[in-house]
Amino acid sequence: MKYFKYIFVIIFFIYGCESNKNSYEIVKRTKTISKNNCQFQISFPEIKGLPDIEKMDKLNKALKKFPEHEYYAKDCGQKKAKSEILGDYQILLKNDSILSIEFQTLIQRENLKTDTIYHSFVINPEKSYKSKNGIIGIEPKQILPNFNRGMIYPSIKKYSMKNNKHINLLAYETNSNYIITWAISQKDFIIYVGGEGEWYGRSKIKIPLEKLK
Image: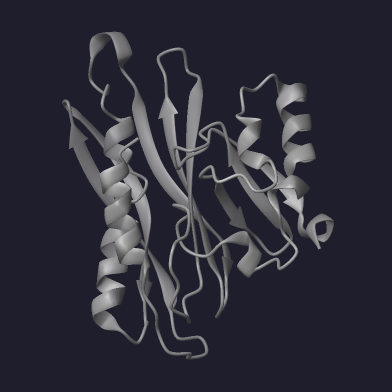
């Protein structure tokens, strides 16, 4: 889904900067999007203080567009599919070697049910890196040296069976090359499931980091 746009994003995410303790901060920005006679608010993070200003500006442009809230608002304003959209984010982990962000697109349907679409963003703000196998930013192994997908497979299968959720479990088998959506916090490894291979998730599962060491 929207592969060319993600290639554009990945290019911007291939960047590097010199080590500088406490060299950056995150500022919360908001904007209003008008689409199909609807208006909705979204919030997004902006990075300040990286040494390379040009690359930081490119990265911030990507962050502003990354969750593609406009795409999920395509039906807004239509009588048979009216919806209200709210875009937000949460900083899960921020230090000199890891920046982990969770984006949420909240879609309120006519039946008052709210669907949440998750996107995630994990980089090392101090070092150059390249995306591999379509995974944006750093990979889990760069944070957890012993990590392999087979370690999280049991937790995801258990969640799928318990909650009757359709999840492509093949994506979580050892040596799988499926695109997965993940993030990390101080205590948990977080997987966003339900959109395997498509750069997003519909539910999130927290797995304690101590289980993956």
